[in-house]
Length: 428
Length: 157
Image (cartoon, chains in turn brown, cyan):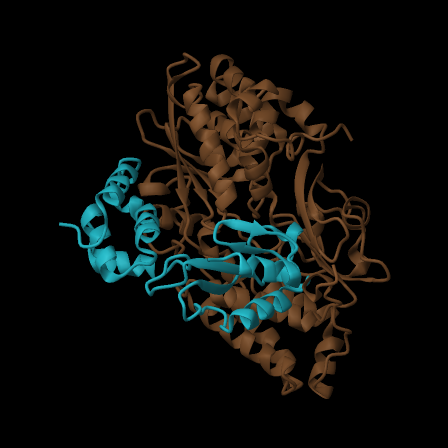
């Protein structure tokens, strides 16, 4: 492994200072891009790099840029999604707090590549520290002339606005995010026919990319597509749950789950055994030990009915009651559903009621089929990915951990030893 | 004439307004600014925001009620937001929430009678490596223990 790209300086002091970032070679890739490369050359480079969007859907970034019509004189926007909220995901926050100029430099290059002169970064409302650091970073970059008018003397102008959210998971969905940025409730737009690339912010063509995606761009320009690919290409896995060393792990994409969990995240707590894992946030189908050797990439995880998503790996050991975990995820989607479409709004409520019944000891055997049927009637019928995220983990749990549900229904009790709570117990 | 918003808040709203091609885009920033001044968003504050951006009160109220960080009723001076989503849940978040609520004698979503602290159970704060984690106003507290919680609560004025 040739080392770290995105996380190289994360953890060092003062990375939100423009001088510190410049002292380690910062904004040189942007300068080169603006002075020596054409927008078309940049789009081709990003396409050749194989970079896929890091927000969860994994759409090829270069292709997305190509889809954005670039008629002369048309206003286009770049919108960066820093509204990180997928449970278990903390890579964007880590980059924003730890090396925010990387994202800003990516914004500058991407705006130039797409003929954009106004960009918005939508920062999650609860991300107080990240928002403050990004704001300081942007101020510093403006002061050095990296944003504003006539950047690097090339005649290229770009303004960047930080837009703060106000508490809504749904706003991480791209069209809901645009609604929110336009000052409305964060409800998704109906698509097709119009995707943001064609009709996005203020009905103008809009390039909408995730914050981590932006941070990859300067490295692609600096190293060239092949040099960049030699790093894996790299991906940021957020590893948490029942592991000894949780954190963001920058690794070549496709590193097997076992290696990520047991080598890079320090494995399980002493004396515990592995039970299950969410490989891509709570929207992904959970997996059991037999799948631990699966490479954590888009295609391999899709092949076994799960997904890489935002590459948030949440590990559960043998102290975990799976039905209780599933209830927690369903409650989350229920509470965050914007209510616009029926399968999501009603389905999430019904499922959480059935799970309450089972976990309260009043479950019925037919509840298992009932939950599966409700889940099937949500799948493929929602306006956006939030609703579609409800069924996978539930359905996988019914497949892999049916016995646990049955035990709850038959005995009214849980057969899993409750997790020892070191932290809140005060002994830690 | 503004009802409750100060000239300085209105001036900051005007500056936010200038950043966007359309006035309504400044609604979330404006509501943040209004809430920063008043502590919550009473109808008068929302009407001032509506006037400043050329919107109607129902438009503003509809947006304010959608987002969990906007409060249309008075809330505590301090806000403790306990993450209860998966990674924190797996690491004792329920006990953390229970402990805070018991010490302050409130339920999640309630403010102490003296108006000092609001306690909320919130969704993933995106700091799962610090589980169980919570926010005290704008500061994140990682891997909270009951001892740390008691100290933290004593420190809130």
